[in-house]
Each structure stands twice: as structure tokens, then as C-alpha cells.
Image (tube, rainbow, N blue to C red; front, side, top):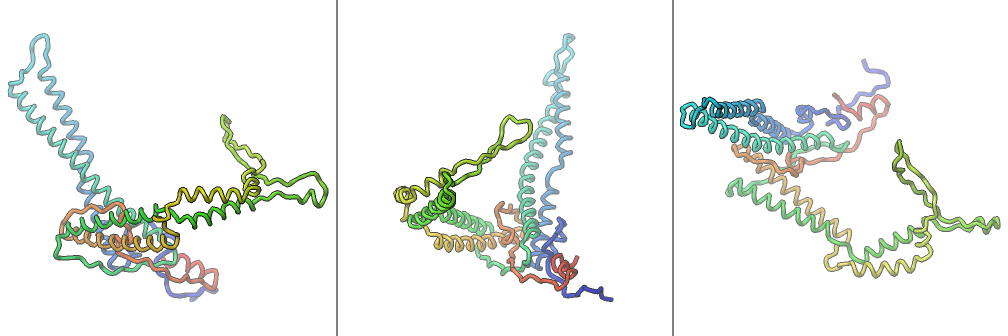
Length: 350
């Protein structure tokens, strides 16, 4: 029996309001191919953690090594009665030989702990980034599988991976070069005039009291200032209202300031290497698109290497969307025609 005032409707897609931390719950939000990649990533993280030597083992070996060192010192401790073991004594030779083997074993297990710990940290960070991306994606979006990148089967996989990562570094350099390029002088001058005019017009002096009421007062532009009070028993702030001399100065000397700033911009500008905002946006968009496609190829190579038993450490800044090879598609929101239906549309079925 239908509940009065509640309109049934088709179930919504992925949740957009709340998602937990369970990897299985997050995997359910992914399309088939991306879900398989995410599950492989989870397995790689778990297997990588299992390879790290247990801390208890390291502590036990360290304690055994320390005890053996103390035992050897006690064997060879010189006492007044002359009761000590010389270096050639078989018991001393055997203990020292065992100490050497134990020292090498402790050193080896520490190196494995550091190396495998770093590998686990890299895969765990990549796994966490993917979970955060799935969990915190924008509302009214769905995740779809992207086309699989084509790999070159004639070139060894690790060589392809190195070439792709080198290309990624080149693209990142190109992006930094675009973002760090200066703006044309004409653009800067227009922006400068807007800034000066904005300050000059923000708080103009007012003659209303003098003109309308013959009161000997000028409405000077005012500025509210706030500062922290130091050496106070409790956090305190002081507030004061004072004349806004900067806006008054810009209002009074607007033309002189603009002319002076024009000259400063001419000295600072580098128009030969400058990019205007529209060209900057186009170039940056192109490079960002190339970076995403390059990351998709790198991700495909990494998963192919894992399938072949090759140990490949994920790059720390590999984009989660490229890692899972997915697209984020915006869908129109659904609005209910009643209060009950609206809540259902927001949360979706559980």
C-alpha cells in the first residue's frame, strides 16, 4: 500500500550526499572496468602490507643481538682473579660468529622494512586518493568508463613506462611555464586603471552636511581597523575608525597615479613572452588535456605490469580519474514534487 503523499519513482544512480569508508561500498559506485581496477588496487595495497616484516620480529632480533653482545662482553671481561675467556676460545669464536650472522640478519630485515614500507606507503597513498576522489566527487555526477589507451606491444613495457613518465614531466614543465608567464602590458594597464578607479570611487569625500545644512563638516572617507591585543590574559582585539587616506589619495591624484603606474608597468613588462588571459586559458587547457591522456596511458601500463608480475610503484601525483580510467559526467538533478520525494532524490536508495 502506497504511503499518502509519497510518489514512487525510479531509483537514482550513485549516492551524492553520503558515502562511507568501506572500499566495497565505494567499488559499487564504479562502472565495471573501473571497479576491477579499484579491486586490483585494493589487493595490491593489502599484499604490499603483508610483505613488510613484522615489528615484533625486528624487536625480537634486536633484543637477541643485544643479549649476545652483552654475553660476549661478560665472557671476555677481565677480572682480578683472571677468570676470562681469550679470543681463541671456541665459545667466544662461536658466539662472535653467531653475532656476525645475527647482525647481518638484523641489517637485512631493516632494509626490507624500509624498502617495503616505502612501497606500501606509495600504494596506500594512491589507494586513499582514489577513495577520496570517489567519495568526494561533485553531486549530480556519474562515473563512466573511458576508452582503454592503446599500448605498443613492440616496445618493452618498462621502456614504455619510462617514456610516458618522461613525457609527463615535460608536460608538467610546459604547464608551469604557461602559468608562470607574465601578462601583456596593455592588459595590466587596464587592470591597474580599474584598481585605481575602484579605490578612488570606493569612499569619496562627502559635502552633503556642508551644502545641505551649512554644517562645518566634511564627510571624510572612513576605514575600520582591527588589531590583536598582545600581553592580554584572554585573546582580545581592538577596533578603531580612522580616515581612509589611501582612497582619499587615489581620489585626489587619480590621473597622476595612473600615469606613474603606466611607466612602472612598461619597465616591468615582457610583452614578447607574455600571454593574455584568453590565450593562456587555451594553452593551459590543451596541456591539461594532454596530461590526463598521458596519465591514462601510464596507468594502463602500470596495471599491465602488475598483471605480468612486474613490481611498479605508482607515481604520487597520478590523477585518480586517470588511475581508474574513468570520466566524470554531469547529469541533470532530479527534483521531487513532494517533501518526501525530495528527500529521496537527494539521498537515493540505500
